[in-house]
Amino acid sequence: MGLSAEQLRGGLDALGAIEPAFAAAILRAGYPEPRIRARGYATLLRTILGQQVSTHAAEAVWRKLALVAGDVTDPATILRASDEQLREAGLSRQKASYARSLAEEVTSGRLDLDDLPEDDEEAIKALVRIKGIGRWSAEIYLLFAEGRGDIWPAGDLAVQIEIGRLLGHEARPGEKLLRELAEGWRPHRGALAIFAWHHYGSDMKVI
Image 1 (cartoon, one colour):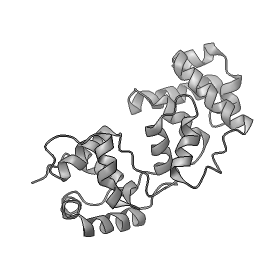
Image 2 (spheres, rainbow, N blue to C red; image 1 turned 180 degrees about the vertical axis):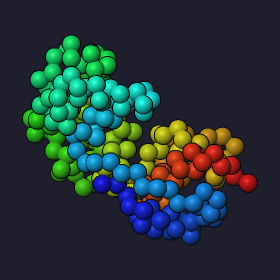
Image 3 (cartoon, helix red, strand yellow; image 1 turned 90 degrees about the vertical axis):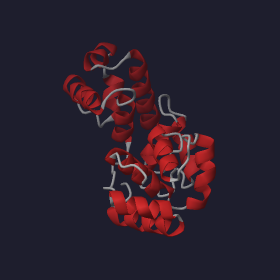
């Protein structure tokens, strides 16, 4: 499971103690709610289905897939489903390929989501070997489903925008710069990412 409210608060308080801009932002926007997803295959499948579509559209595809194929929390369901069923549920040919690849990795035992490497970078490498799972998707899974507190999705546009805004940068920092800046924020970077989304969503501006 993801970071709890207590873990988020503790991590952000620690960051606020070393960076006044973060402390001020927490006072303005408050602490974020936890973002928690279930560990395992179903969450990764949902991640694939949700790529490049709205949350509402992804949920509709999930429901339709369950209707036409059966228990979509079981990877064997995707492997049994025909191409026609997957198309009927709204999966593009590419997403159907990604979904089958994930199901094959899990059912073959090549991917054990209950025993990913403890090292974050090694866990990311294990996940990005799956077709359709890039670094951002792997980081989001590890943060939301496993509660790894130092995951830092520096490639996320909203995180770049908001951290740059909070720190007073004239231009949005790119991924490389954001990773360099964040070295001093270990081991609480996951809490900061969740706060960045929270602050971004609140549409608050640095005063």
